[in-house]
Image (cartoon, rainbow, N blue to C red; front, side, top):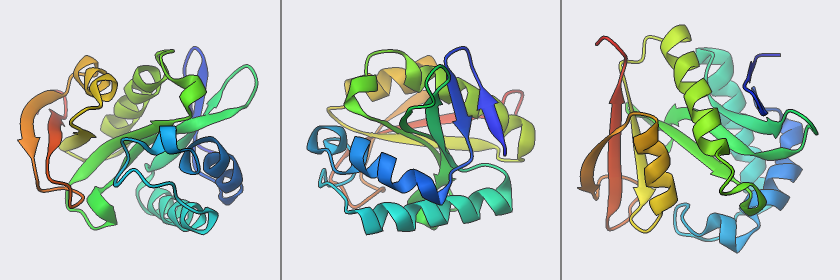
Amino acid sequence: MHQLVTKRLIIREPLESDAQHLYEGIFSDPLAMKYIGDGAPRDLAMVEESLRRRIAFFKEHGVSLMTVTLKDTGEIIGDCGVLPYNWEGPQIELAYRYRPSAWGNGYAKEAGKAVLESVWRVTEIEELLGVTDMDNIASQKVLLSLGFEDLGTTTAFYGQEELRHFRISRPGA
């Protein structure tokens, strides 16, 4: 199994068996979903379908939106990785979501750094995007701390009126 290991986390390839944990910890929780898409919780079938797409993308490209677990306990706390915008591309974005109990611990930055290093090492992707809800200041700070450039606002993604838009280029490009 492919995995990235940091000081506190294991970021591993997604498995269909992750669905229930991600559903319970993130996708069924209105607080966790507040800044994701339209903010509505997802049902288990939607989470399962998303995992199937992640797994297929990983098999094809060697990167994907991966499952993040705590190294010490194995608890699934979220996901972090890259995926084509809206599963259609051609833009590739860095995305991450965590259960609220994991917020404020620096996990998003720790996992994001490991994922970026992996993406630059195992792919030929030249640039990644990031988009956040306008009010998701914590996520915006994570992207900036990872070296993303703030491009201002955009209405080009996810059918939302306005999102904060970020970009990072392959080092040395």
